[in-house]
Image (tube, rainbow, N blue to C red; front, side, top):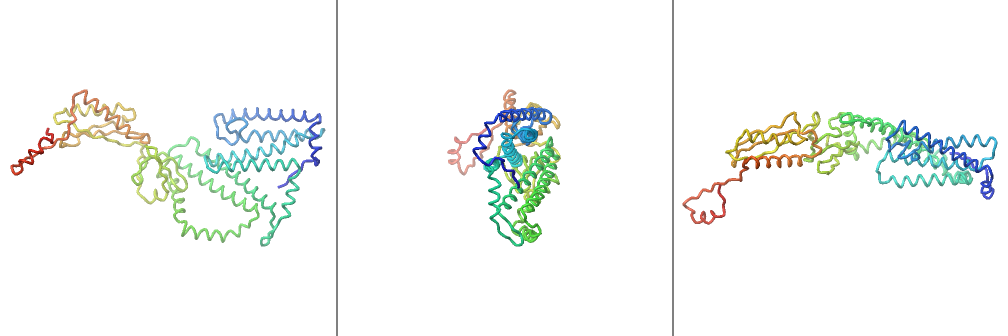
Length: 438
């Protein structure tokens, strides 16, 4: 990491330089660069990303993304180069480190926001990046940065055959962070492109490709970062063997979940959007992570199921090959009811619901001769079980009850027959008034 100190060493001379006549012209040039950058970003946003609010380049507004400060930095650097050829430079020399700090902050914050959405630790990291960037800018402008770096270089120690200093360690950490940010940026762009307009099995397959790509890029970025710090990667062979032993014993469950997640995503036996039943918990798969799968029930409850359970246990996939699900409701009517009329009313009650499919059509069947009346089973199909089934069944039952009352069809009460023997006349007589007979 190298820095160019500010050419004015005396602070009073640095302040007096702002009273020069050319400073106003430099300010006008800087404002012109800002307006030009704003116009170019507005044009590019309208062409390439009109509705994108989570873009790293454009952000939520014209000046919120990475593109605006980057373009302004380029224009400011070009303006300073041209102005310095014939005039002394004052304001533009300060604007360049300020714009560099702004670009660093925007890149770090935007990449982390896209890569780790709604993470609890995201806000402290964003503030840390901002404070470090602005502190570096102040040290750069004031000319203290080279002095500080030289002092940090004097604090050194020897590890094996390598010589490390505080300056080298800080530069290595910053380089590692920069490499990881670039890696996250590339993986976020690939994931956004892969998952765009993908549904069903295609979404699951693209999710697997996205996870694998991110893991590979993170691994490569980590290796480059470790190399930049000065760590000999050949020394990691022993650590790799120890990690392998740890996975074989203590981390086998964790490794099994990760491998199972990759198998689920590539095999597509379960996909995002499928209705499944696992351990008497039924719901829709909302996300498939590398270690676990999130299942959301129609009631709003969410279950986090380790992927190993989905591989080793029995799982009912209600929409693996066909998203349609069969539902039924049972109704009893009096024995003297018209069977054909009852069947027609049941079918009409189901067909009247917009969620009930017309093909296959609802079917009403005389399923049993019950103790209290004729039992009919109304079967129907729906294509959106994730929207809930209890509410639909309630609507159908209410429609059936209204139709039966309108047509005078009786839904019988339970009937019981009491046999009285001569051996217990007193007990039977005492129990008779409290028993309703039909």
